[in-house]
Length: 251
Length: 239
Image 1 (cartoon, helix red, strand yellow):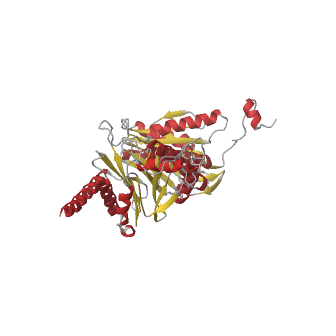
Image 2: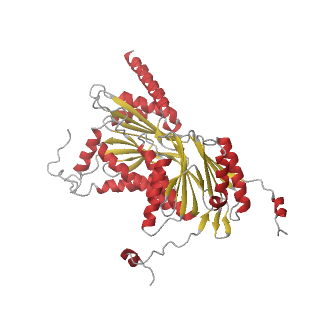
Image 3: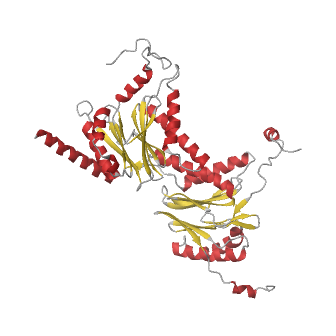
């Protein structure tokens, strides 16, 4: 693929002559090899959707979820190496609980992201440890505002209106850019996110997948996986929308 | 010789860190009925003899199946509340289909109280855990004191509630075969609360009533008992 590190990529404590830290870039490549995740910040809440690839028919359904709950009001979807994401989940949860105990209120997502991004960043500055191979999308609806944040392997934290990570990141981003997020409700956002995941899923390379959806909104201020009936309804609508657009293409 | 951190470690002196409670919560009454539990306690945080804080929540709803309440130091219970909230939140986040019921919280509190007493720094509370145990499909109620003594019972009265009112409730319950219905338990509790309020000067006429059943738990925040002080004239020495 792109350039070979040739000696400057052996550990995270090195710059290359053209100013790159290859280990961090390789970590981001690891994320790009993983399943796609999508986050949409709608006007009254945030939707997270993941393409949970099922590598074996022997897996228990619903197991190995890519969506985690960090605190009552904060949810997270992970792209890339799931074990790395799980260890960051503990860090995120501890920080959120510590803040709650010290200040007597739930942690603002911005504060949490900056704190944990600093932690992730530390792993890019030592030769003895490797960076985290996962990108996290974090969602919240707190004090009347919806927020979506990302933390990537370099330790950068950004707020977004719409974000995607994983193998079909670019296709997903193209689809997201077409949406008028400021005027979408969370219910509509769910359908769009489901549709995007289904449309960017590569049927040839990866066979089966489970669509996971979560929401946090004005109506549901505690982040949760979308209830089964709603999820089924949304997924059916998404598939129908895809078939419509497919048949339009055929014409 | 004054007790210090060193002497505690050497095991020579008793700890004097916890000598007495500050703001305290009063009696708690609990009655198990067929299909659930009723809990009652007043909304007072007393500062010794002073009715200092007259509108505090002493019944904590941990989740739909567990109510926890207490007698004793308010600050100590506020600390316990944080532990319980964190425990519940962590369980929610795990999202693995297992819920924490009254039995689990009862065991957890039992261990916490006993370990604190073993360190010579007890939490100055008598805790009552009540709820509906989904695993056994039965209501649950138990008490833990600051020494770490634990027991389960269908009838609990702490403080003055224990002295005056527990025997009264027990006598009423003996008349009923098996567990009372919710209606019967409510009537017994109402009478018990009245007696408790009339006879215990440390109670305040604002009550929280908690109900826990298979379908969930509710707390009626602020009940005021209708009282009739005309009977005072019947007491010799009044006036």
